[in-house]
Amino acid sequence: MSDLDSPSPAETLDGASTVEVRTSASAALIPTIRAVASDLAARADFDLDAISDLRMAVDEACATLVDVAAPTSSLLCRFLVRPERIEVNAQVQTKHVDTVVSTDTFGWRVLQTLADDVSVHHDPGGDGRAPTVSIRLDKRSSDVLR
Amino acid sequence: MTRADPEYGHLYPLLERYATLPQDDQDRERLREELVRGFLPVAHHIARRFSNRGEPLDDLVQVATVGLINAIDRYSPERGSDFFSFAVPTISGEVRRHFRDLGWSMRVPRRLKDLHVSINGAVSELSQSLGRAPKPTEIAEQLGVPVSEVLEGLEASEAYRSSSLDEMLSSEQGSATVGELVGEADAELDRVDFRQALRPVLAELAERERTIVLLRFFGNMTQTQIADRVGISQMHVSRLLAQTLDRLRSRLDPETRVG
Image (cartoon, rainbow over all chains, first blue to last red; front, side):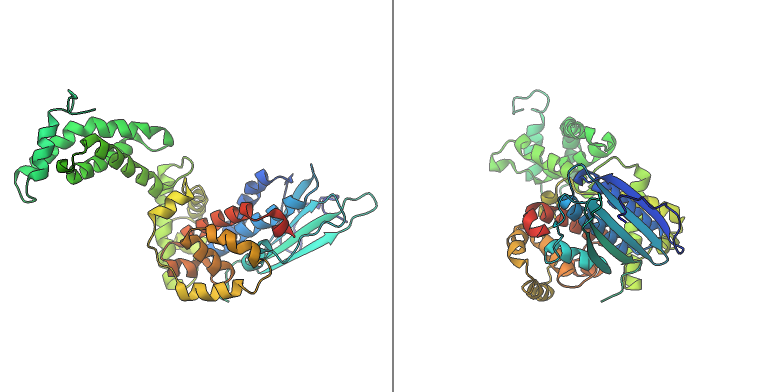
């Protein structure tokens, strides 16, 4: 099931607080989403590098998705705030089944550097559901020196 | 405004005299004071021109007066230029620098600006002692204020941004560059597929921005480490990175970026 078709209730799943933000898939609304991201990270006592990294990663992920989103569709961003880490799932509907987010780009490099873990998922949809693309990010509360 | 100007005309002989007096002449102080008082309306006038940007007029007048004093001290009549054509840009420059230093892009209460300054100080001390970026609770403990206040201050910091990126760049030349580290990052960049699209766009950036981007995304360094190497604050690195990414995003061909 696509997340956009079935908004999951903002209940706690295995101890994580859930925050969902749904906007039009428009670049103009990304600042709102990244403000939510950095607020959640700051309140979860992430270190300042991690707060800033998460903020930029969410910005990058959302900008990437908005670029491929179907016209007049929405962008759904779900944050799972777990102890010591935040998981982000951002998703848009696409017009075509074969729309892909490429991973050999500078944008993807940015995501890989800023997040501890990042992946992209393409769902072809079907049965009346639109195809979707989502980017999943995982960010730990403290930057481990690599 | 020329020598014939009735409001300032009488000050010109004083200016010329002031410029010729030796540094240790006892008359200098008195003369300078008289000149500052005489030209003060000019400083007020310039301060008022900037008064709709969210800074208290009193502060602006003070800054403009500093600019006026600089202009009086540096003016040399023998170069033949009119005092006003020297003083007006000097004073405006001082006021502009004030805004640049503040860099607040929206109206933020003074209390939060002060808090921002103390947070910034605490961040650099803690980064030194911890060897990593501090957490809000650690900053709160260091400053002896509630965490909620630190969170509020951090939020206000997001409103802190240079009005013009380029202006900020030109004002802060001379911050350290990190040749060897950038060299390694640069070699790493050579190994990626999108370097052909990225290189020309990176080349358009000012040196410090390019350095920060290379170190962060190809040199494997954290913002705090970069701040330490480049000699600016972590918050400043964070701001510059976000601004630069934004700029790169708009400059890179979406086809290239999205693939």
